[in-house]
Structures are given as C-alpha cells and as structure tokens.
Picture (cartoon, rainbow, N blue to C red):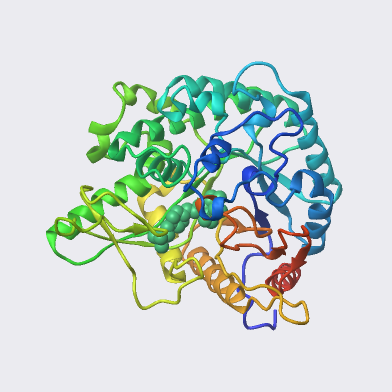
Length: 457
Ligand code: GBH
C-alpha cells in the first residue's frame, strides 16, 4: 500500500460497482419486455435533455458478456445491477415472461463464472407502465404486486444470489418523480407525493418477507442520504432545515430501522399508515447508503424567488424551505460539490441516531460526473474522478475508525450510462461509453480502482 492515494480499508472489505437496468440495458422492445414509466417519460417532449432515451443506452442487453469480462479485469468482488420489473412481468402482474428471466439467468451465471457476486436491486425506478397508469406508487395496490414480483425473483434465484436489495432511493422517486416532476412519472404534487414514499416503504417491507419466504437471504435497501446543513443559526433556517432533513432522510430510514415516522410528516401520510409500520420495520440484514453530497437549506426566500434549483430545475417557491448553493468546494461536472467530510459526518450520524438498531452498512453508490473523453492518444485521464473517489473512500475509512460498521463500497458507476433527466450528458463511469460505436474504453480511474482493490488483497 505505497500509493498515497490509496485509502486503507479492511482486508475483508467488499469492492463493487453499480448500475441500473434502464440506464444501461437498452433493448426496450426486445425479449417480451413491457414498457416502463421511463419509456413513457422519455417520449414526452422536453422531459429529458436532447430528447435522449434508454432505448439503446449501453446496449448491455446484448453486450453483457463484454461487460462481465471488463468487471473481471477490474477485479471487483460484487456487481450491483437491477432487474427490470417490466422484463419479468410486462404489465407488473400476472405470468412471468420467460425470456426476461432467461436474460438475467445468463447475466447471473456469467457473473458467477467470473467470480463476481451478483447483488441485484429489485426496483430501480422503472415502474411497469400499466401500473404507473393505475396510479403507480400512489396506489397501495402496487405493494402486493411488488411482493409477488419479489417472490418470483427470490424463488428463481435464491440458490445463486447471496445478497439482495429491494428498492433504490425511494426518496428520489418520491421527491423528483412525484413531488417536483423532474423525473418519471413527472408529477408535481409537492407534499402530496408522500403516499408514494409510504407505499415504497411498505413494498420494501413486504418484499423482505416475500424474499425470505422464497429462501433468499441477506437483504438490504439502497437509500440516498444527504446530510442537511442549515444556512444559518436563525430559528427560521433551523426549522426549514429540520423539516427538509425529515423529508429527505429520516422518513426513509426511521420507519425501517425504528418502526416510526418523523412526527412532522405524519399529516402527509396516507390514513392508517401507522398500521403498516410493523411490516415496514421487518428486520433487514444490512443497510445500503448512496451518498453524493450534502444539502444546504434555508427558510423560504422572498416572494417570486424560487425554492432553489435541483439539477437546473426550479423548485416550487411555495415550499416551506429553499435549497441554497454550497460554496467553497470543488464541483463535479454535474455541478454537485465534492465534500468527503460530509460523508464521514453522515455515517457517524447514522450510528448516533440508530445505535444497536443499525445493521452493518454497505455503500451501495458513490461517484461523480466527470465528463472527460479520450485525448488524441485515446487515453481518458479522469484525474478528478480518482481524486473524488480516493477522498470519499478515505472518508469511509475515517467513519470505520470512528466505529461505524461499513462492510463494502459499490462505485457508481461501472460505465457511463443514461443519467435520467440529463440523458447522456453526464458521465459517471469508470469506463467510457462511446454511444456511437458502443465501444467501452476503461478510464484512468478504472486502472486506479483495479490497483486499489489489488492492494487490499
Ligand atoms: C443516484 O441518484 C441514482 O440511484 C442513480 O441511478 C444515478 O445515476 C446516480 O445517483 C447519479 O445521479 O443538486 O447538488 O443538490 C442520485 C440522487 C439526487 C443525488 C440529487 C444528488 C442533488 C445534488 N441524487 N442530488 S445537488
């Protein structure tokens, strides 16, 4: 371990990379796949930058053997990907589409053969369109359908898949999908989006039960968390930040880990939500954290001003808080600040808040958009991704030293892919994707990550 840019993690640490189905697979009309909320959202003019869609994306549906070979070369222990629910059940319920299952059979078997542990997420935002048209995550019926789907996957894969994730970032689907309308399904319900949060949490709890009933074990969830910083000591800013913190963080963690909702959000939850808490808090085996950056929050700004910007979209000015720009830190190409110390702060705050109720943590996502492409010699010198990742892994090491039980790290992402509402304009990969030729080119960060993993063996 001579390289000074190699943070020191335990030798038992699990090293991984992450992706998600709609962001990489393409082949949206192949193999009997049904449409998802994202296919419909991308088809609406003006929703996604440049009119980009996931129709082809990285063509991983056809090129998965090459992608597995790249991961083998990278030397990761585990690969986090997601199953596309509409490939398995094209309308979100009813009989299994055998061709869809067969694709994941090939992928899972290929990974196992390469010595890589498949770590699937059951749901990463691609709601079957039929269910979305029926109210999607606002409609409680989806929770039982999701449990059926979880049972199908558990039954089929329990003997080959040793680690499972139920849902990815319910906070983002709730706030950006149903609250602010920036992502699919594009609804702007404000606090009216909270039933979507409750139903995802309930679906998670039911899925944990369904997976276990099918013989699958070692189950977690991947929640996005951002430390919330108040813009000042003023009571107004403190109160706004407290509310935002409950909305962005604790409403997604407290019900699972403590069996209760933050009080200030109770008025926005569906009637009888409390009755579901025992299901939602079904014990999990580990807790997944996706971390990118903290959020700076103030009281609402003056009339006519916005509630702040999220990835270039203006938030509703009538919200009881405003998001402020964080200054004084390096920015990634997406404009998100790089603040590794906030990662340590987040992890230690989890231990402090949940104590013995907190199972081991895995970092299920962390990474940055750095949009460098190949230079004249074909090399992609993404030094800033190496800096970001090294600093954030050092922050994880600091948290471990402070007593937080972090067992592994999945970098977002294996390769450049369809970055939701910003299409192909932001590149998060260790591997460069040429979207014209579908050539994959490992970046300097890929070699750095490979050496880092090697150094820990
Ligand atoms: C994840 O979401 C997703 O799971 C994944 O699919 C996605 O590709 C990846 O991250 C990269 O985006 O404007 O500075 O306040 C990330 C959730 C929500 C984290 C928005 C950063 C705003 C940053 N993100 N948040 S800022």
